[in-house]
Image (tube, rainbow, N blue to C red; front, top):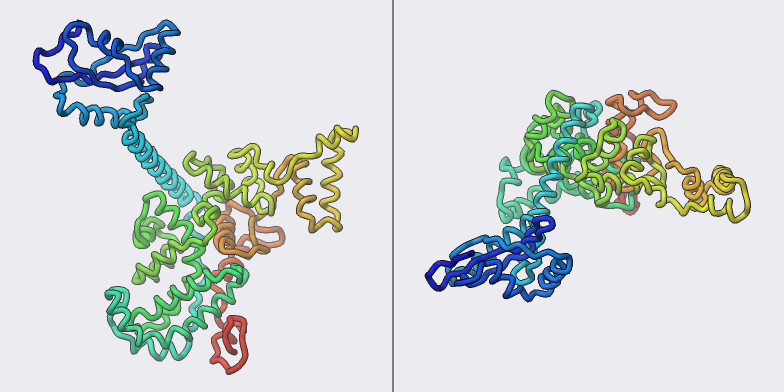
Length: 490
């Protein structure tokens, strides 16, 4: 028998338990009973909530009776509402499948917050594990080629030694605005030089996307014009590393940062250890803010983020398992490359492991049904589609090509995901990632090229010849009345 305290004004908080699996299903409160047991008092009163009442009826029809357990005894009536809410919130947050309706929203919200926090933590741990693994297997980012200095235009070279010695980035906004008179007239010629750099990098970019051009110009102008400098040769070397930071080093930094391994460029440089990439980053050690912006550079394509590009291509060729929290990101990226096609065989194998039905994105598999409908031998339609796709009359027909791939039952592949015929914001990163793997000996160079030739070619794209005819033409003093490739007079 449950005997209550003789004092009035107290209540009992109880929980109803399903005797079949010992699961807590309903949390309630009741005045301290005087005669019957707690279980008798609770079951006599019966909770009126629809879901609870239906659950109790279902138990009784199956020949069971809910078990009643005490959660809190002798709770003052004035406090029972608060205490019941605390118990309810904690149980719901822990995932207990309670049927309570009143007051349950807070607990369910807390549970969602905890689940979200756990997902974030799991994803960060996964990024950290993969970043460490790739660093040990690949040795870090693709190193820059021989450092090529941007030829800073002569008007800018003459004025940089005359700039204020105070670092503009350390000033308050209002003070920084007042100093614009020192630098505003220098930004135009320096932007022309940045445009020359962008023109030299045209094989890495889509000219329809102004974002990379603006980003590069902003970084170059910020580095060059933030304060007085005496060593202009060092300044030109730093500017020459801007494209390499944005496209070759950024995927590694973003991956390490996502994994909680680094928080600043200085920590990233130490994390890379004694590598050519770390030595290059040390040249920019005094540009912490601008270096951070360059290393965090991310194009607008959310499905092809730099760190995911690196992870997907590297893990496929290293035979690494993708942790569960990162599988969707990798699957989406590989699926986007499938129909174009730009998957190597290891990348295609990884995609099909993550999504065995991935080929459905190419086209419906019409070949078996066509064979059956026309009374053809199995495989006839598939062979016809493959032959048609190879014929020059259908070389530009995407539907025929994808239908042939679908009928073959295997993903179309390339030897190297070079992206040389592509344009768009993600292309520079993907080309740098491919060269990174070739440099590490994980991926073979394209046919007809040695690994050294292929890597040097991509490195030259990230650090082009600023003394080329095109660069000199774009940085020459403009003539009046004519427009050049960069959209300015020449």
